[in-house]
Amino acid sequence: MTVVDAHAHGLPPWVQAAFLEWLAESGSTAEGPPGLWQSPAFDGPERQLADADLHGIKTTVLTHSSNAVAALHSAAVRGERRRGPAETIATVNNEMRAWSVRTGGRLQAARWVDPRFVESAEAEIERAATDGGIPAISMNTAYLEPSTGRLRFLDDPEFAPVLAAAEARGVVLFVHPSAKFQLGSEPPLPGRAEHLLTGSLSMLVETTVCVMRLVLRGRLEQHSGLRLVFGQLGGVLPLALGRFDLIHRLVGGADADAARASGALRHLRDYAGNIYADTHSSDAAGLRCTLEALGEERILFGSDFPVTPGEFGRADALEVLRGASLPAATVHAIESGNARSLLGLGEPLTVSDEGAAA
Image (cartoon, rainbow, N blue to C red):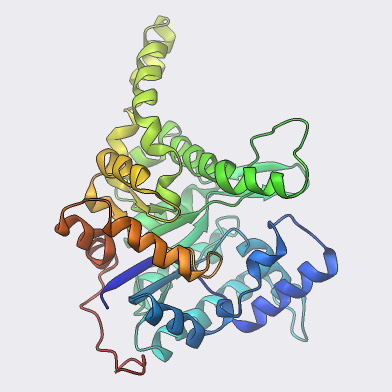
């Protein structure tokens, strides 16, 4: 087993329990169909390892999914001990980092950072850089302000100190769509159809909007050392590079003011070196497109386990990768080499026949 899965999710048991209680009591579908979050593997390192062993996964990188804000809020306000945001975030991160010790390093957790709480975010970035775990943090593409319904993407000026701190400490940003961005189809589609639209397209567009806003706001120019990992092949980003180039030229040629404004911005593809993508939910055609757009050194294997069950998030995805007629070196880079290089992971640990780290 050599594969590194760079897109998986987990939560401490008390957080997962609080989140499921909230889902049951509220009946909310704001986080998608409640069944997405029912797997017992969310809160169990042993179940995480069992599925990893089944599919040849040596190392799993645990980040936070679109439900992170709701899950951590549920945990903060429930139970005997109520916690504020900073304490909740730090406690969750420390417990998730402990999973690495329990599993001999086979589970590696990125620290959750909420950029709305700047002091907490800076503290978690510092811990990510110095606590002995992987130098990585996990954030969402955008954060919904309930009072206004406005989404604040990562280019928001108030989040700038967090991006600066991440760059300064050299930590990797794993960025997951919030699933709060909607394409705004009217009238709304009924029930399950709306969830299908969100998951299959809105989340991909949300990721791409996040990347483009970071470029257009100049954040990647200001923080050229940032390394960001986006799920789901970076949304529709690989398809948008040529279109961005065309619009850049059209806007620049429209009038003198537009030319000056456009000329101040480099092309989207100029920032491809800052951007990594994982393979989750890709077919062979999408994978080849991303390889051509970003380069083989920018793609990591990712499964979305346990939101996506292992039999198709891992087994089918690996079959697609290995059956895409790619050079062996490219397959190896995507399966493990790129993630190990990006995160400073050493060679895989020896694993016994029983699947326990040795």
